[in-house]
Length: 363
Image 1 (cartoon, rainbow, N blue to C red):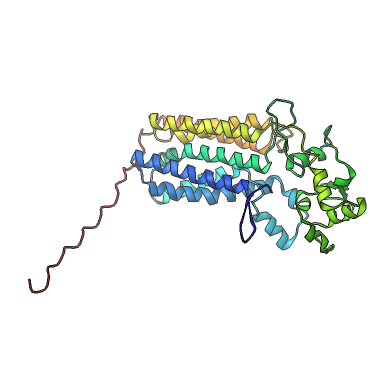
Image 2 (cartoon, rainbow, N blue to C red):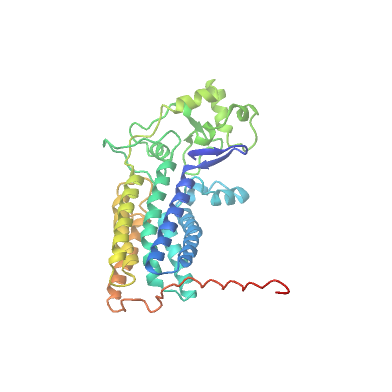
């Protein structure tokens, strides 16, 4: 869990991933509210949709991650399993799961409140792209959603213990080997993925000497590190120093590719919004274009398995469906009125009249 800073006094670690998500939410919400205000829409409705997007996006994205990567939780039971499921500080979010749940939640809220679904979705579409762009910066800080090995000048390397480094070791990629000091043997014979050995976790390496000196405890997540220290006569500091010499192989910074394309898409959608001829054009344009940028970037990513007939990832499959929705939606708009029938200009509530001043007694 890459930490951006700690809160003084309580020592709470704030991950860069969470900071990026919060910045993305705030900037996107403010941008959408200003767009609504300039358009004559109700900013409060937009802000309500933003909070639905915040919670629905995280829940939906986490659920999709659990579906895709349940094997990562297979060794946990009971309370430990529950805590790992709800711990999103380390990442573990799949954007399309959040996008789908957000669309469902926002559409239901707008329909229930008798607001224009097409108009308000158009207002929020550029902000959705912006939020996803900033969220991808968080993915880069977290080290997830990484690309395949490459030798391009802008290739990046992630530190030891990162998902990229870990995956490269599992795949036995050339140059991704580790010295025996950094590889532990499972006390149960095999790990959940079937292997008998595993790299020392990043969390174990971040353990301080005081925790290690406390002695091995049953089920302690630092047990393997203590065993390594005894086996190779190394201190915790020496193990951490050794690990720093084994970063990942250079990979495509696919998170930054995605951040750039989504940022440009946000600007494009904002321009389309002010030039649209029909309500609904902006949100359907988002659904039409974004999936194909995602499809292309999935070809460069190395973390998603080819689950669909061994030919495509689940995100690529969902990209096809979302793009089809966008195309069908744009086609259907041709038969709809240019302005949504529910599109009503918002008028600020009239200020209550000031109470009349009473004269002095006896006047």
